[in-house]
Image (tube, rainbow, N blue to C red; front, side, top):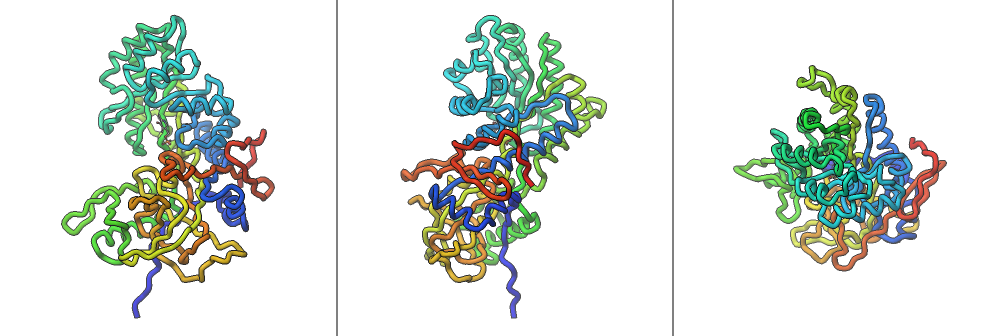
Length: 485
Ligand SMILES: *Cc1c(COP(=O)(O)O)cnc(C)c1O
């Protein structure tokens, strides 16, 4: 007899509040019946819980800090209202995000504007009172030219190109800073230079430490130019933890790599290699989905950074150096604040078999609605138990290895290009939930392709053990905070 081993799975971590919502009989079904399927659901109380953890790390170590919620991670107004109510600042990267922040109650002193800005946006920002995080020397010169005398436009300078860091399209390269200092010194009455900023795409701790060291050195240089920076902005990039089981994740990836070499059951749709290179009977490289393997939560990543001793400063920690130099530490977390604070629910339309025997579970949602543009989401979607009165529920068939297909009439609209083992073969009407979609998954690249409308966004809260669901836009945070268990 051959041993039948359990199929490889990618179990998702779920916040207890989200777990409780999924387990509440009829809760998801009722929301879909009322508002339509598919739907995005956001959980402002989970945002609050994430915020508490980051704040705890900062309060223990620093006298001056500011958290700017990076709005671009999600369009949710409920999150923006939650950030406003909690007293945060906000990082906006477009005219529409700025309008959203103002509409949600943020005054200019709590708004920071990052990202590439054209002439029109710069003109809007001058005189608004918002802090402009300058991306390049053209922007800095335009601010100097457009600013009124004594306007004191608050400005941070985003720096990039630190020795050893990969080249970035953003920021002023370190080697152009001589020119930046000249502009800042010459237009001191028009531009209120508040300090240096960086934002790294990479989650690598050593790169972040190096960037901090460089910005501290630049801060000293700025003093030599007669400037008086008071802020050090370390950006966002604090990671999420998607997986509930790192060992299962590793086992899945090993099985996937084997399958790419033709061993075992096929696990890739349409010749996908997920960023791996196949060469000489071996699999090389880093897969597109590597972030789903992370096990270090954002608050620990932040604590580790602040507790790092810098040799250039006699071994004193980053936090102590910031405090001693009266530098207010700013950060711009996006994904760390919305981690586990959103899910996307969709319905199975039909299930079909393809010419090669693959099972395609076709949903009423498309790939761009639940995945970041170029990545493969490596956590298993959750197949909910059929509604009690469901006529469409299929018999319990045991685990089924399937690919999830989207609703667009495009070959590439596969929601999963890797095989997903569901606990049973689903049928029409079943509900599938994509976990942890709030950060960049639900609306960074979503489009109204084929004229499908965007899914409604709903806010879910729990009070006294029962759940309330409303439209995201109508959500108002409670005056006092509700603790999440
Ligand atoms: C996108 C972005 C952030 C947020 O990044 P996360 O990785 O979501 O924390 C912060 N700052 C800037 C400048 C950004 O562009």
